[in-house]
Structures are given as C-alpha cells and as structure tokens.
Length: 256
Image 1: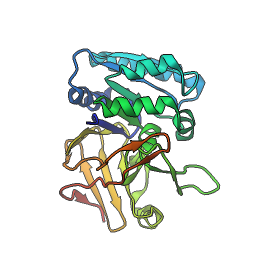
Image 2: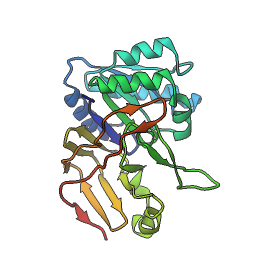
Image 3: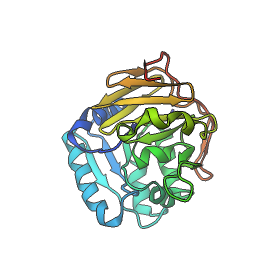
Image 4: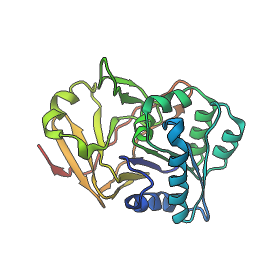
C-alpha cells in the first residue's frame, strides 16, 4: 500500500512548514525516521544550502535527515539511501532539472518502490509539480501547455505559490487548456498531506481546487476526504500512472 503524499506550495523547510512535515511523520509512524532529501531541482550552487536548511528543519522534528546529490540516476549510494528511507523529499527549484534527473532512471524506480512499500513522499513546488502525470510548461515559446510529469499521481496539475497569482483574472480561459484536468493551487508555506481519504490542508495558507465552473477554497485545517488518486499501478520508467481524480467530498468556499 502506498505511503502518504505531501504536496507543498513552496518555501519548504522554514518554520511555518513544521506542522506540515510533522503531519507527514505522524502518517509514517516510525520512531526516529530516516528522511532522504533529493534537491535535484536546485542549481548545483544552491543545492548545498537547500540541503543544510532541510537537515536542520527535519532534525527539529526528531528525524534523521540526509541530503543526497547523486552523480547519476543510477548512483548506487543514492539508491541504497532511498531504499532505506521512511520519507523521501523532493524540494523546489526548476521542474525541468528534476525531470531530467529522474525520468526513466533506476533512482525514480527506487523512489516509487519505496513509496509503494509505505514510505512518505513529499514534493514542494517543482517537486509537487513533477509528481503528477501532466504538468504545466513554464517557459516560452508556449507557456502553460501540458507536458509529461513523472506520473505517480493524476487528475490535476499542480500550481504552487498559488497565493501570488491573480486567480479571478485567468482561471476560466486557462482551465480550458487543461484537457479536463483541474488545477490544484497550493499557497506558499502550505501543504496538503495525507492518504486514504484523509488529506489535510496545513500551514499558513490554503489549497484551491480550480475547475472551469468554479474555484473551491480549502483553508488550513480543512479536510479533503477522498483518495489523492485512484490508481492500480505505476510505471515510473514510462512516466505513466492510472488516471483518477482528486475530488473533495464537499465544496469549499466559492470564489466564483
């Protein structure tokens, strides 16, 4: 049975995110958990600083955290650390860098296998974007078209840093390009954490479910009581997942 998923909107590993990651550790339920941080979306010049911040953050929560900067997607030492992890963390940065580092690699296979065995998997910003089957292209010449992600989850595309966006002005025409997918907007310093019909919004902001007909707002503390994705299997090599929606049981506050 897959472990819990954490989808974070950015500014991970700062104090406001402690409740988010504490919930992840509670979901995993392991004494002195091993947390493996893979800052693969970061530029090399920034990866060490991101790793140090992450180690201190998870240490405050009682976890043993290790930063892994694999030399390749088949790095044996990295694979061994992932295979022993209780929580795997994909911090923010540049989505294309993360995709290039993981797509079709033994390291991605190991991450998926460990998650399938019950480990927690957290993605923040670029990490959250990449976990879904489809993601938004963020760069010219055709920004906001759908392109492949890693394929572990499906039903939505993720828009992190959502509180920075002028949602009312763009959501209707934008969603028409999503091919039936909704947008899962996650504010900075905010996360959606859980599994098995118990997905909780935690942190300083809110989570927004945007569809062509409406925008539904879920404030911190709110529960989305459906499975994150209904899935019958994952093929990480081809970056495909079984489709299934993320749907709230009841509508949140309307921002029509």
